[in-house]
Each structure stands twice: as structure tokens, then as C-alpha cells.
Length: 310
Image 1 (tube, rainbow, N blue to C red):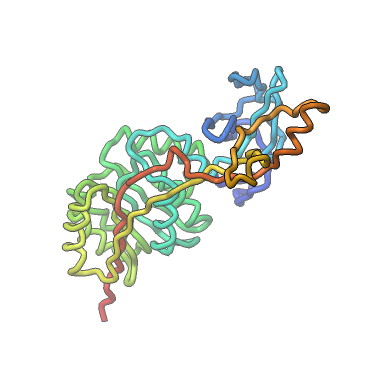
Image 2 (cartoon, helix red, strand yellow):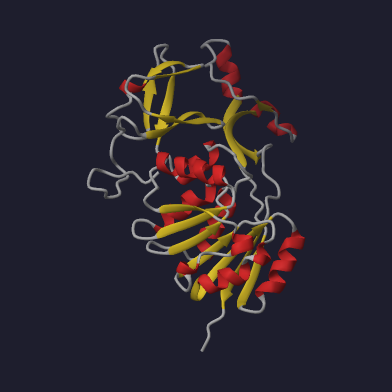
């Protein structure tokens, strides 16, 4: 995700190397993460792609198969990683993640605490936000899940920015070593109100906490606990509505009658001659309509700021 050169400096322009992780973009609804190995091949419906042909090309390149099919090789950004990662738990998606990064006021150099890690969708975005000098400490009570997350962070190149711990934050709280050091805390727990007192001790003065909960009853109980030591308590529900935008041909012959008929988009050109008459009777138009795959409710995001002690 955060590409590094041999001097360990962040670079967004270097070329693909042997051992890199790339996102293979087949189409908008078909992508996969692939580790580049010069002796390996990728085989899909578009043909056979040699990894050796990828090495040395810049990220974003269009590469061809033995059948002249093609795919794009993209950088594994947090946005793309969220779409291709293995779902060990329910994950946060881009709309919720964007609001979390903004309202937690995360900038380079911040120290962020997270519980639980889950599939690591949010963690990758937190790592990019705090880079290059900040750090994310994320905890999960499930040991195997934490181990899988560590492997993913190694693949995406953010292991120097993220430390994964195995700990029951609801029962034990955060480690005392972070007391008063955290700029922000994120909670994704079944009973977040149990961890709020510990989170308050970890935060710097004026630090911010966010709790993600799928049920409004969890939000209500969390807010009751927050009122004792936190202020500026807000809860949001993000409902993202995406649109499909494509070009259609409108039948101009019926416009004068007060109606119009849209013809399905076609990749083939009409032959000249008789077919050209129809082309003159229709004109291209860009149509936009809500996507049939729009996501509904994911959860509630509750933010609160630690009260300053004068």
C-alpha cells in the first residue's frame, strides 16, 4: 500500500518489482490481489499473463495475455484493498472509513489505538493517514485473526506502521503503557461501553474517540457512558448512494411526439449505407441511474471528545 524504496522512504511512483503485491483489475466488479513472482503466471478468462512481463512496469500499466486480453496492474491502496481482502469478520467500507479518518482528526505523526482489528480494512487506512512518522496499535482478542492480520499488513507493506496485539480490550482495557499518549481511539466491539473508561485514560487531553456499532441500542448505552468524561458527542449513519453512468442512444424520431426511447449501448458500429439513416435519427446521450447494488445500513459511528481537565 505504502510503497517503499531501499532507503525506506515512501514512494508512490516506483515500478513493480518481484515480490510486490498488485491489484489485478479485470473489470469494475472483478479484482484480485496477486503477489508478483517472476516464474509465475496468472490465468483467467482473458488468457495467460506472465508475471515476468509485469516486472519493471509502473503501477497502473495495462498488460496483455497470450490471447491479447488485458488487465490493469494497480497499487494496493486502502480503497482497493478493502474491496479484495479476505473477510474474516464484517468490515468497514469506504464511506464509513472516510468519516472516521476525518472526525478522528488523524494526520501524519498521530498515535492511534484500535480494537478490534477484524479483517484490517480500517487499519490499512489508519496506517496511511498516520504515515510516515505515526503508528497504529490495533488489538483483537482472537489470536488466529490477529496472526492473519499481521500477514496481510506484511503483504501490503504497512507492517512498520502497525503493531497487532492479542488482548481482550472489553475485559482488560488498553495496556497502561499508552496512558495519555493516544491522539485518537477507535472501538469496534460488541459492548463498547465497557472499554470507554479505559479509552478515556489512553487519550491525550482533547483526544477523540469513535465507536462503531451496528445496533442503536449499543449506541444509546455507549452515549450514557460517554457523558461522564466526554463532550461533543455525535452519532452518524452513512448511507452511500452510487450511480451508474453510461452512454445511450436516444431515438430522435420520437422526441417531437413528447416521448423518447433509449436504445441499449452497442459496441459495434452500424455499417454505412442503409444503417446510416438510423444513425442520423439518433444521438448519443449520457444517462445516470442509481446502482442496483447500493449498500444499505452498515452501522452507527459515534464520536466524542475527551473533556479537558483544567
